[in-house]
Amino acid sequence: MTIERLGRYEVLAEVGRGAMGVVYRARDPVLDRVVAVKTIIVPADAAERAEYEARFFQEAKAAGSLNHPAIVTVYDAGNAGDVAYIAMEYVDGTELRDLATGGARIPVGRALHIAAQVADGLAFAHERGIVHRDVKPANIMVTADARAKIMDFGIARVRASDVETKTGTTLGSPRYMSPEQVLGRRADARSDIFSLGVVLYELLAGAPPFSGEDVSSLMYAVVHAEAPPPSRLNPDVPPMLDLVVAKALAKVPQERYRDASELAADLRACARQLPERGARGDERTLPFAPAADAPTVMLATQAAAGHATAEPPAEPAPVRGLSRRFDSSAAMRRLAAGLPEPGVIPRARFTATARERFALGAGVIISLAAAALIALG
Image (cartoon, rainbow, N blue to C red):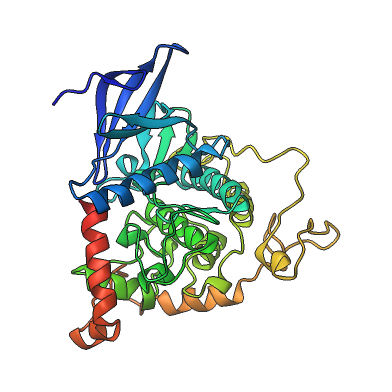
């Protein structure tokens, strides 16, 4: 059935279709602007319908409270007959997953520019009690002028919300889940940081940090396997960026960046270490736009000490632009664990045995497989 109107919005074309709904390009005749309208595919069962609609309007409530350059703006939400919809900012761009398909690597400077913007947007949401829970390339739009926009807070957990994502319920895309999400534990801001670390790894290395022959072995790898540092797959990646990625991908949440703004600061610090233009002319071709009066760098160990201050300029850091107090020891151990033997080609892959898979628990595996079907469907 062709839909010509949703509420006051005139449907112009279908632009996307996913597991939970359809996205249309539409026109708002009142304000005379083009918008994106996202609808929900409502289950026939009344109980499931109520749950889906509640989750759908939770997305509107969560994203509608956020006004940030790196987050898609939500304008309106409502019902049109049997269809629920959200009207939002129409972003003329490309999904990040389409920019890095087939193992293609994005130039390091560009990857850092995109990831730092996403970290900025996540930090803004986290400060307001909103956890995305499904950060992945398909939920990041990139415009022609390299502005990144985070989409789809549809499974976000909002504190004090009427619709709770209960502990033990796995929501998200399997390849980008944090270990705690895989295990059915409650996600927080550090879970989004892990997922962004996976996205950044893919952009830099051209391959995912964790993979498996099936869903269960993939999930085992997320929880237990250490990926090789991205510089082993891409020699353009500087050593300090290996450490930043390893810190974001720490298995234990307490070992990751405490908040996404610290990750964004370190990504920009790494960008400043890149040559003005690489051998192929592909480095630092995009602006990084640090604030003119910004402190040198704010790093994770400062937050762990309960405060965030600028690094004193009197004591130069071992790597220009990065704090001497950068907590790299744990990251270095993880990097060492991921290094292959001499002469061995590194592989970002992990295959679990049947006994190891069983160790995750049958209940967890079933929930993960269900989540994978929903996310990949």
